[in-house]
Amino acid sequence: MHVTAFTNALGLILMAGNVPAQGHPGMRLKRASNQTADLSELKTWWHSTGEINTQTPVQNANVRQSHMYSVQIGTASDDTSFYDSFVYETIPRNGNGNIFCPDDLSSVCDGRKCSEDDQISIEPDIGADMAWTQYLASTTTIVRITRSDDGSVDPSNVVIRPSNLQFDMQLDGDAVLITVPYNEDGHRFSVEFQDNLWEYHTSGPESNAHYVQNKDPNGANYVSSYEDTMPIVGVEPTNALMIFMSPFPSSKYIPDLSTAYNVPSGLVTGLDQVTQSVVHFGPGVYWLTGSAHAILSSSVTWVYLAPGAYVKGAIQYESQSLDLRATGFGVLSGEQYVYQANTAEGYKNIKSDDTSLKMWRGHSAVGTKWIIHGVTTNAPPFNSMDFYGSDFGSFTVDASDYKQVGAFFGQTDGIQMYPGSHAQNIFYHVGDDAIKTYYSNVLCEKMVVWKTNNGPIVQFGWYQRDTKNVTVDAVDVIHTRYVSQQVPWPRALVASAASYESETSTSVADITKHLSNYKITNWRCEGICPALLGINPLQNIDGMMFFNIWVEKLSPASEVGTSTFRVFTDSNNGDQPITLGDNSPDNLGLIVEDFYVGSEKVSFEAGNWDSTSLGRLNIDGHYSGRWTVR
Ligand SMILES: *[C@@H]1O[C@H](CO)[C@@H](O)[C@H](O)[C@H]1NC(C)=O
Ligand SMILES: *[C@@H]1O[C@H](CO)[C@@H](O)[C@H](O)[C@H]1NC(C)=O
Image 1 (cartoon, helix red, strand yellow):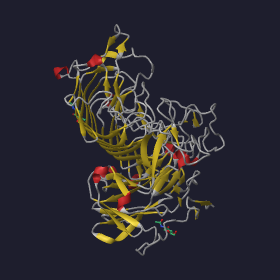
Image 2 (cartoon, protein in one colour):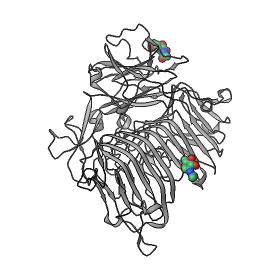
Image 3 (cartoon, helix red, strand yellow):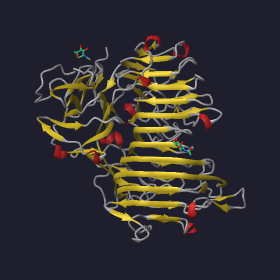
Image 4 (spheres, helix red, strand yellow):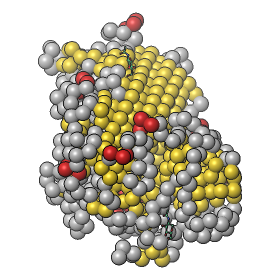
């Protein structure tokens, strides 16, 4: 029996496995509460084992269901029929607590065990969580949202982010209706009820500040009231709700299922013995446990997660095929793992860059292309993806319509973009480095980013590199909540960390290497934002361009809102400093054009760029003449 009773925030007793969507008060439509759509214009899905549980791990065969939101979808052309779309939910640490051993809730980290702080502090105590739903459509749709907490669903109480989407909203009894125009890029947006916001305050301006909360006296970092010295560094919905609308996939994203290995639902074993090339997870729930992951046999090149597949596990390819894929609209969830689960040490909470679990991993041949499309990665315990191989010069990624949710842990990066990669139409809820631009010939576009408190939005540091021809275009940052600045590992929209091997030394640059033709274009950052840039240059920067960047407001947190560009030198070459702009036209290394803070443009001409002015660009005098703000 998996039925367990528990009490939700309203004090209602709910039964796991019993669909709670039955009979929303005031619901007008007569239909089964879990009626889904499988139409040519609309597809939604449901899990019959939804478990509403905001506190503890859910049963293996259950899927955590939003305790707060129910969503139905209709098409604009038929405004009388709405179909249920399962609303998933993720809570910080997945209800496991801060533990050391997988599946052992008593193995709480106590300062001796657990190699690193997981960077979750007040989030469980304030009841932060993230819900999401996903559907497919080929037409304009209406998203119908109800709340279980009697809060207002009046459109005047709702903000949709990115805020420039400006979808039409209407009140319909106990629901808000949102009209979502069809778009071949899909839509990834946050629905935010303004009576359900949490203002993240920090303990103060010091550089080792932490979040404080006034909600739970028994919780972490409680203060009975906020002092004036405790700034607000970010504002988020307490109970987040993301909506993902995708077009129906083209045939290149759907394998021939007639020859696939159909994974039986339930406990997954033996994928290392499969002889087929396609592994197919159909609708249903799958789990690997907190101390195993799916190591695929070398025949497997394609993992297909059908709509309605929910797989608690992580994927490791062993194939040497040059064509690897992961597609479908299912979920790969890391919820059963402890933070930084180390596969070489019993999946315990012991960090290793190599053997701590990646949700997606491979050991690939030269020339491989990995296509990832449609999939949602939930609750990653560490960097979400790394492929290993002898030569990254010829391993590439084609990522589209990809979503990462529930990334409450600190070191949860976005996916790697190896040389020649193209990433588009992506949503990241992300703790650490979100967009990783370490390699050349990368195009990353149409991103929605929800950033928590570690790492920058774009990272290009850690190692001395030759990188050219990188474009990161059309990015909407919808939330950030940085606590403080970390000079060797800056928090900014675009930043480069100091050397991974020697974090404190400024004489580890390599003047024989160059960053060139690097473009950051058409960005919007909503709410409280970090600085434009924070650069520890480990190689010469020949050409870097920022074009059309809008930030609503720069962070008040200790230095988070102030841009830095330090001087690094090369100890192997007579301590020569790196250069800015030496190999670019007119020696103009750094160009910032059309940078707005609020409604005001920042420029040299307006004299509002420096560290004490609007733009807060604190760039070292060493580089004067090699950069411009216009
Ligand atoms: C809908 O709910 C009924 C009753 O709980 C259940 O028998 C049925 O399988 C559910 N359908 C889906 C699609 O989950
Ligand atoms: C620059 O990168 C883009 C994106 O990968 C690629 O399409 C283009 O061919 C590259 N340009 C050069 C000159 O290599």
